[in-house]
Amino acid sequence: MSDQTAVGAQDADRDAIAEEQHASAEDGGALCAICQSNRLGDSIRAVNGRPACDPCIAQIERELAAQRTPGSAYATAAGVGIVGALLGALVWAAIEIAVDLEVGYVAALVGLLAGLGVKLGARGSRGVGLQCLAAGLAIFGLLAAKYMAMAHFVVDYVRQDGIDIGHFDAIVFGVFPTYLGDTASEFDVLWIILAVGAAYRIPKKTAVTIS
Ligand SMILES: [Zn+2]
Image 1 (cartoon, rainbow, N blue to C red):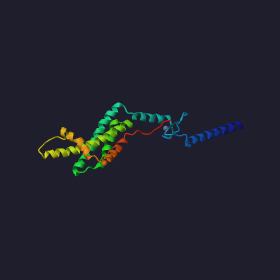
Image 2 (image 1 turned 135 degrees about the vertical axis):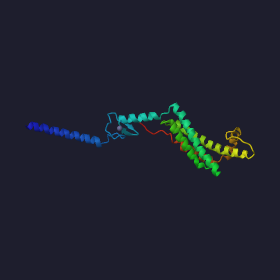
Image 3 (image 1 turned 180 degrees about the vertical axis):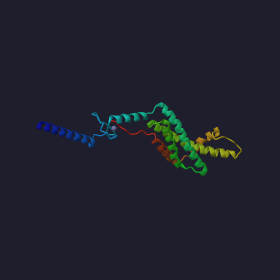
Image 4 (image 1 turned 60 degrees about the vertical axis):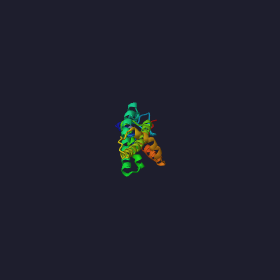
């Protein structure tokens, strides 16, 4: 009888110890930093220096793999990015034509739309290559804005002399380099910085290190 009691007491002790260990595992530091589960195996890996479980790491690796840019993504990113840049350029040119003033702060909008276009077209891909594409298209958008505004004024001007030409006439294109040179100012540097700055950050890769 006394033996049985002793065994029962040992069982109770074991239960208490097991419960204590479980509790310490729950509120101790051995939790996945991402899903807060205690699925951390023996091989503890880290994401940005914090412990993470294998399913979470696998999930992050899948997301990172999706961010790598296949060649086809560049084509669609460039296509949608050009549309975005041209939309921004239209807004700029429309404002310039309406108020007869270069409103350069719209440069940020040109960059933003170019960057968003690239991001949309790249369908989840990100990285420095796409960032450079966005920056390049932002500058393309600025040039397009200047061209649209200039073409509008040139076409208007020669129409007064009875000459009818289109906005994309060779004569209009021919005037463009001279126009660019004549109207270039230190403000253009600011507009380029605004546009490129807005575009470049949009398709940036998420910073994750797995160790
Ligand atoms: Zn986890």
